[in-house]
Amino acid sequence: MSEELLNLTLHVWRQDGPSQPGRFETHPATGISTHMSFLEMLDVVNEDLIEKGKSPIAFDYDCREGICGSCGMVVNGVAHGPQRLTTICQLHMRQFNDGDELWLEPWRASGFPVVKDLVVDRSAFDRIVQAGGYISIRTGSATEANEMPVAKAMADQAMDAAECIGCGACVAACPNASASLFTAAKISHLSLLPQGQAERLDRARNMVAQMDAEGFGGCTNHGECEAACPKGVSLRWIARMNREVVRSAVKSDSGVKTARR
Amino acid sequence: MQRALTLHQTTIGKKLVMALSGLVIVGFVIGHFLGNLNLYRGQEALDAYAHFLQGLTPVLWGTRLLLLLAFGVHITAAFSLWSRNNKARGSRYKKHQDMATDYAARTMYWSGPILLLFVVYHLLHFTILPAHPGEVYRNVVEGFQNPWIAGVYIVGNIALGFHLFHGIFSATQTLGANHPRFNSYRRDAAVAISAAITLGNLSFPISVLAGFVTV
Image (tube, rainbow over all chains, first blue to last red; front, side, top):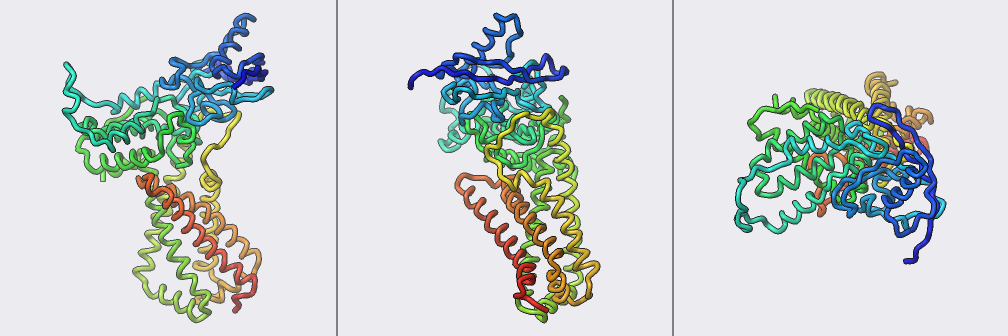
């Protein structure tokens, strides 16, 4: 694949803080190599902004290997940009054409307040996990590897659900800004494994209560989340989450916890 | 009861209410359509079928109450979810591109209110204020000979078709029926049921307008 240089126009969402109004700013991105990743392209634009004494565009990232779930933005109306099953850090500029105009927006959701520019506060996801996305284990030395047998089929399914990296693209893409796919993936991967059985009844109920308390919308089965998910997490986990919620409503003895934001 | 009420306060509980009440209405719509096919057997058959239903007083009123309840909770839950979902986005995207959704799913908030207005009109037209009480066949045929009235029924049933398709597919997902092995059948079943009901229902006003069915 030969290298080409692209000249692009970026319309970037700039916002100074959660309560400040945001606006679009237009910046040229010139001489961008098709071998660059999307975030490297933004690094180049930012170097130019810094040299001119302007404030650089704030965006989130960590590993830049597509596995940590830190990065993410909406490019021309699509979460993580045009390539499916790819985080924005793994998206390369060869996916774009010379002269393209790109609109960069943050994840827009009441549950994800904007910190700055394209950076949003996703601590709502941490609170959903804290509400029940854990297992209680004996601490100390590691147990025997095969002490608790897990059937291959179950392990595979749990792994599929556990692929969720918590990036929030599902919320960004959902017409209702629903966190159902994220919450469902976390509930499902634990409920499928023997280690997750101890808290199973309360987990679904408490995590769903927290998901609602964070101000996310409900699922209307459009499938936009599944299409936007860089890890291909399936809608079937939302169906499974619903079954888990009914199960916990029928079987659980403990009182309902009230969730707070 | 306490648990059911708590469940109902969650978004998932409300979705379960939407799905279950929706499926009750789908069941009725299928039965209603099959009964209406008596139109093609002629005046005597349709009027006799109508009188037979009127005679089953407890069943008739039981069904009416169940449907009223189903409509009531379906609309209440829809309104509550709609207002929640509206707030959840916060600020709107400047650019938006759909990746997976379809026309039926995107227009549920339109097809729903259209259907509600249509059902109210339909009840006033044939059940509450019929032109010729007791003469169902005559009411239907004379009503549909008016192109405006037939038009209302055609629009109403097209909205029904889209609402049914997304409703059936979505309700099964909400109720937890999603498995890779069966998902293509789920979609096929939603298409088949909604298409059969819509095309069948559309055939009534069209047959009258075309002169195939006359008084």
